[in-house]
Image (cartoon, rainbow, N blue to C red; front, side, top):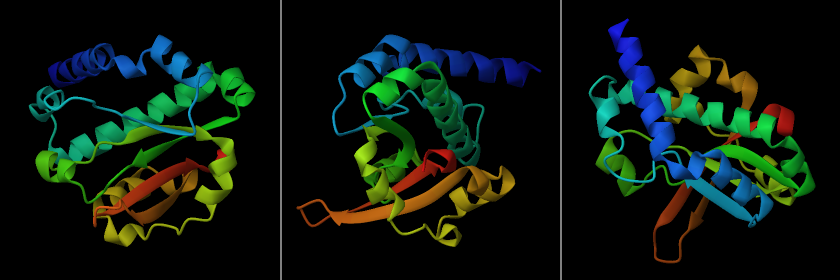
Amino acid sequence: MEYIMEYLKLLTTLAKTEKSYQYDEIIKLLKHPVEFEEIPLITRTGREKPFLKILSQKQLNLFFLNTAIFYINNINLMAKDILIDNDLSICITYPDISSESHNLYSFYIPNICIYRSKYENTFKNYPVLNLENFSWLHEYSSDFNYKDIFNIVYSKFDDGFGHEIFRIFLLKKKDI
């Protein structure tokens, strides 16, 4: 029971610390949208450290994914009219799977992605991700039936500096 209480305290601390996920900030973003905006679940190095004291890196991947799902579900619920009025959609992204941040953290930090709905068709046409090559995501997709909830696709492009960006999108099936 003590473990659960510690976990809930950390979750509350994360919600208070990450200003970009507080109601006013999300509403500001939605009311004054850009074409494509990604907000990392953790915006500063070091904010993950308290979680590492009680969660393994594997558990941390799942915790952050579940937290991202929680946020997109609640944003869809609480800001549905704003999303519709501004022709916006929302999904989860892992922006650069081969990035230095994974090498730094040894786990993946998802983003909440807010984008103009006109990109929906583009995203729908991205190749489906072969989950066999991403064991951490494959396991969660199977264990928690995320394959039934999300279409998991990817894009690859060169950043112009000789570095390939590999981005994973988790698009809610009801939204596409």
